[in-house]
Length: 431
Image (cartoon, rainbow, N blue to C red; front, side, top):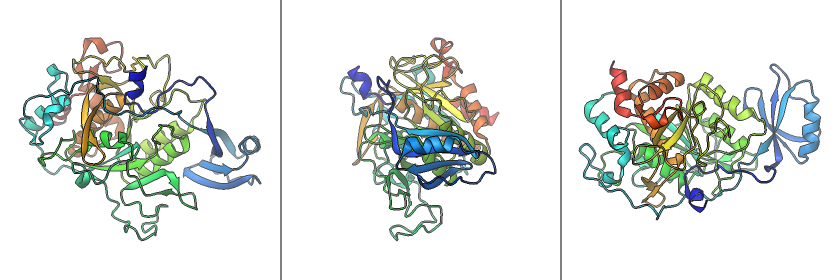
């Protein structure tokens, strides 16, 4: 059990007690074309996306009861915490994998990235894909990493960090009128100003979000560190997951909407929780950003060695068409021993054991978990989209799933029955 707490899905826990919720916020959906009802105990309504609001109050139970009887209200949900968990650090019980020099990349630590190997070696055929399928005029893809933040100054990430071109750094003004002040590189929903707005300091103090970011978009061929899977990508760091992994539903929803409105086409979600209480708002937000902004949300399946067809975990167990769910595969090519699976619920596998990537302060380390498999898949998705930017989320998802390396062990455990393969995906674009 101690080892599982070190693994990468940062908020997947089983609650022995009743799940905790915010004592100041509710989630409310209004019926279409309804006006906001006047409730004396409500201090503020914050629109999250059409018809969906975060409602601030000092009396949760009283306000919820009053809202539920209003004709304008479709439903009321509490703003649940995911549950605290120890976030992953390095895994000393694993020895790092050291391979030979990489034929395509000059980054000196590439020998540790076994996920770049060909499919017969358990990898995603990343090096082979770049060697065989060169491309000009690729489009830059913005990827949002909703996590513990990101070290925007890391030597192997800094030129691949998203910049909000409409915002003037440090002037204390919401220059481009998107509702956030000085959000040059993203936002922090865990820290809010006097008006309740998420602030702009998205720096990662824990390490998880920076590790995820490096797998997706570490600078390729800069003779430093490692290379990310995607070649033309900008990382939008959104700090929504506390260092103890106890994120709230409202913050997750706000992060989805912020990412989509500011140009992210793919969102990495290496977090989750083992309870949902019948909540619909997070799934509705995923649906909204897919339909309105063309966003594919890629999520970790979890690390409990469970069949989530029978034991759901969220957001992985939502059924949105623009949601891609990822299991973890090991260096031997099979399913990582800790990985969740599900013939109905889990779409693909990707390398997630002993993944070497960036950590804050220009450092690097190996971590394991479906948290690490997810950004490998996100990197593949971003590279595909950079070469064919007109793909819809469902089309992009279909390409990833239809070009997997089939693995007999996965036939009854994953929807696709296979592990993601960048070379085969790019080959399908050529055809």
